Amino acid sequence: MQVYLNGQYMEETQATVSIDDRGFLFADGVYEVVHLYRGKPFEWERHLARLHRSLAGIGVGGVSDQELTEARDRLVGDVKTEEAALYIQITRGTQRRSHAPPPAGTIAPTVLMWVRPVDPIRADLVQNGVAVVTTADDRWAKVWIKTIGLLPNVLAKGKAIEAGAYEALFVRDGIVTEATSANVFRVSGGEIQTAPVTNYILPGITREVVIELARGAGMTVVEQPFPIEALYGADELFLTGTLTEVLPITRVDGRQIGAGAAGPVAQKLLQLLRQRAGMA
Ligand code: PDD
Image (cartoon, rainbow, N blue to C red; front, top):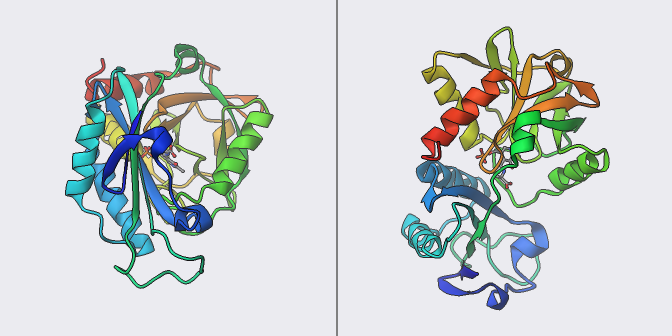
């Protein structure tokens, strides 16, 4: 597999970064994951815009859209599978270890990009839904920055897997924020609800598209916080994310949700999303 690293294309095994890379030392960097459907990047402009917001959020400049788009096109040219993921990671760069970030523009950021095949979400998961557990959202207060510092997410995901579940839902002060790598929606009385965009969630691109698709299909969507208790009594729950697409949740903390299988709203929204991606 070819990767793009700092202006060059090389085999994955040849791509190395310094032990002084600030991404390695401090998780001082940001990333994006873009879904490629038959080689076509889904919602590229929105991913680019979010990447720039994240970069601005950590004060890193010097990355042009031209560089990213050229590398994207070259890497995408190698894709042989129906679906793939394009990963973009930008760290502040390499500098002898010091907490103090160097003045803006004095070191070159490390830019890494690769494309790997993804397996389409398994049909049985989409049909039967997945189990999740709830866990304390002990992340920082700038979750909108898509930082590579994902330790809380990693630990929460580990907790979910240990419990035999697929994902963990973060709960902050009794309010459900999102999952470790997806946003969360709830359906109750015909109304679709998801947490509003605040500093405490990642503003998911899929979340945004799903809201648009739902409204376009005449469904009611409210962006309002909901407490953990509202999970258990929901008619439907589902996750949204770049690789997750729309994935029903049918069990929370061991309790069955709704009918215990994919609900009609989640199924419809998945279908609309796949259509929008040119896959249905
Ligand atoms: N994760 N919330 C978190 C914490 C995420 O990490 C992600 C995406 C989302 C969904 O955002 P989007 O719809 O833009 O993918 C929400 C990516 C896919 C990842 O970490 O691999």
